[in-house]
Length: 321
Ligand code: AVJ
Image (cartoon, rainbow, N blue to C red; front, top):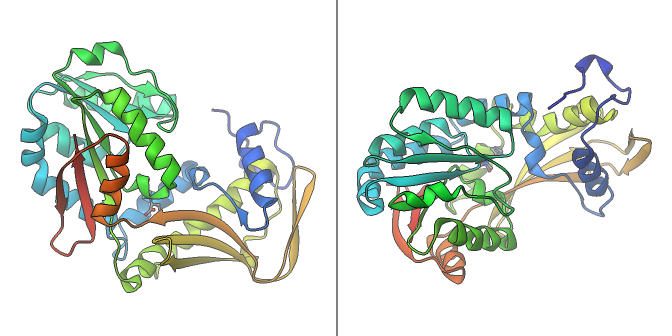
């Protein structure tokens, strides 16, 4: 993908991503301004997320890895030999290896991602480490219909893997659409393993999304920096503040960027007004109860097979069949 030069600050870049532009213009035009969280992950955003996963306050990544380490052999026994593993929103390299190491003679690994370049890197690295597993990267959005290579049907079973609580970014409608598609793609005897964050005290949740080193704040604000870089915006990052709030009714952490003062910003020839204290809603990170996620899955033709949790019940790995 072509990326405009960082040096063209405040000037309209020569190359713009039309989808990004229309998402930003639409989101900033809503009464509650919002930006889709999938735009967090440019190069800088991906680096910042990587840094978040190592923060002492951010429990999800570490906890999920511990659970997967502990449950891998049992999971492998339930999945059986010679599976094709399909990873949705691929790139969780550490977790992928935990499963590939535990599975009995897996035949295929098929990571799904929108970035062809990223997928090439993932497949090349893993091919070296796992010469016996055929790599079949699938370019596409896991939220839309994907072509699953028919070759994968020759495996004993298809095993879907959706780690990292990415499911927490989705609405109920998106989750049920995902479950229904996954059922079609993985087949009636397919299985699905999902990493889902659990409901817990805001005393644990808030610091996880508003860390003392300010990395999550930088991650959130990078979205404005990206708009400046790629869409020629003039957001003053000093005049917006990161905020993480627990929305108990909807069982989710919300991230916002709050305008410290009344101000106007311009991008792509349009101007947007902010009242002092007005926010842009940038992310929902849902926290599930085990029965809550199970009932969504059951509505879409999946049966709960097994749930693994850490002793503190911070995070869950849930298997469906
Ligand atoms: C990558 C979506 C799982 O919701 O915890 C981390 C993203 N946002 N800190 C999450 C995120 C702020 C993360 N997910």
